[in-house]
Length: 305
Image 1 (cartoon, rainbow, N blue to C red):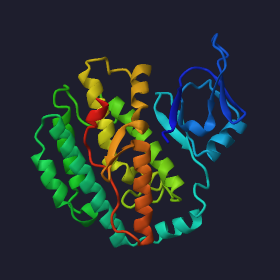
Image 2: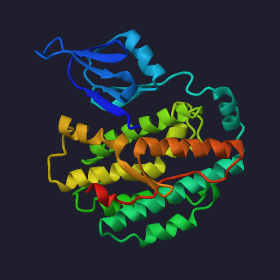
Image 3: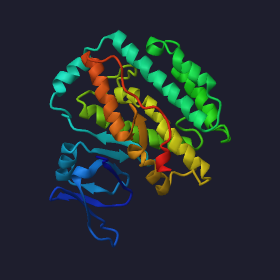
């Protein structure tokens, strides 16, 4: 089932009644609206004057709905997740925490290789040279000791947005960095939600380590999925619209990310479902029943065009 993503950018009062999310707009002449809570996967709260009841928060958490709040720059800055996301959570966390260093290095090798290969496929789809990236995707060593992930990323972005004057991938750089930042934040929330639902700690990574980062594992696992944000942003840039300001129209477009078509294990799937398959396969690796983490392969679903 594809879960819905809701965005609230105006003052509103959010409550619950009869297992529904109920929306009232105190400053606007709009009728009350309601949405079944079971249909919700993600809620983005942007306006500082939004009021949400504790009863609704409780039901959203029980439904494993990710509640995302935004800062003064209108960028996602926090996310609410349940303390218990899986019935076997303690057992699953134990296997995660006991993962050996060689296993984590191997998982990171697979992750980086999948990311670089997807970057190559994306450049190829855009009619750009991808030979170096394809070669690098097969040269990644255990633990990526050669730091090919960073080398490939620099090469990839240099070629992907080479027609955008002054562009380099930097969080505070020129547009479309603003679109990439927003899209990656949404993707991070999708991955964190899936990890919690699979009974794992998003804070304990296989590569990323930072005592100030509560989403190290999410940052690891999202790497091969970044390509879908990149592709969506590239399509937006190609339309020629104004991308200097992150307008509501652009945000609405980027909030499609959880439902984007993804090709994984020979089948098409919404991105949010594909991520759940990836996190499930990750746990199998921690458990010792598998050595391969399942990642998507970038391609375009021509049937949806």
